Length: 266
Image (cartoon, rainbow, N blue to C red):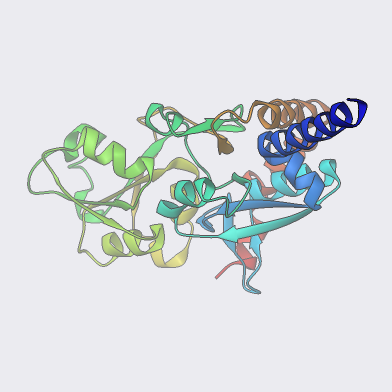
């Protein structure tokens, strides 16, 4: 009887252990593994981008490096196309998404999001021939205008929402879409304000005009699998901590006030 009881107890412990491991969240797994794996698309200046040496750098990347340091683990960035971020997370190719992702109701049905680490909005870059003709987003909602955006982004969604009458084409990267406007094959580009403000400082885009007033409200956050509340709790406390100790302000100034890093990218 005692032997049977001990055997059942051992089975129960094994089942509990497997159940615990199955429920372990992304942060727990990263600590166990010693590596935090983050899915990102390094084409969103200045949040995540590739420098001349092939390294992924940026404001959000620095936040992730601070996060990894606080966890005591290494950071591994997994570069995928933007449209592959959610499928990649669901397939456990990485622990979380850190890629300038806007919290939307649609995405929130698939993911859990951390607290926002910055608020952005959509703005418009237009071809110089539209000077004096276009003063706001509503002026572009005509059948004759050609609008470009980036695949899978909230810029694409905003263009569909606000510019349903215009012609819309989407491209894999923001750089390709902007080039369409520069070369006169499109009239306007819709994308997040930080990217657009920096894009027009580049020599090849210097002739473009910017409608700088954002016409949407978009919080950016880290994405995790549904139900991973322990990881969300840790990340939210981490974001609060770096906001209080000055780390966030230091990194924000590095990427949004000091433009020295522009020389590091192509």
